[in-house]
Picture (cartoon, rainbow, N blue to C red):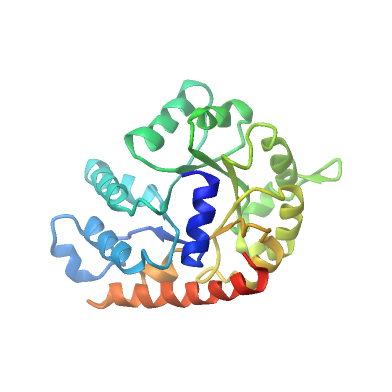
Length: 271
């Protein structure tokens, strides 16, 4: 999916919601555990319930890989089931040098037809550039994350420049805003404006709104640009809205609630 196509979907649905598909067998409705593939049945119901209110889905591969071959099959079935008008993100946080990154990219861009994959920048350009060699595909680079441990390295000063700022500046030498997004945590709202100043035209994938305490209003006010430029992810707040047989309807209601809030910004910012 191109940047123009993504923006078109955002305007069409008046939404920049990304739904995280992180199925935990200990949290999904118990009645699904009796099915042949509980993970896929759960995801399928969530997708059917939320697809009108979101523009992207983000399966975190850890929730599938931990189940071995069976989990991988569930992931493959899930990705192939996703609507073609939605942006598909493999949240895999890969990043290694040389052919290893190339094969990681092949996995998520060709074997699994994803639009984007999350990538860690710690090993530098030769761990990221192989992902950028695939036409029409995206790298979503970890920049400023929302976890407490981000303070260990990301805010470390070097010559007056924080490490996450260096990542943002350097990465834009490797790819354009047509192929490079950044992960920017919602719980670091005071820093989002700084990130936007350093990357004015790139899309941000923003986790941390909802269950993690991030504010949608702060994310938009500090992080939006003229094209919206945001994909705001919600996982637990939507997919685990209920553990009963009404779980899909509960997820639909939560997704609709967030989309309704997002729609108000389209009027304010004239997107």
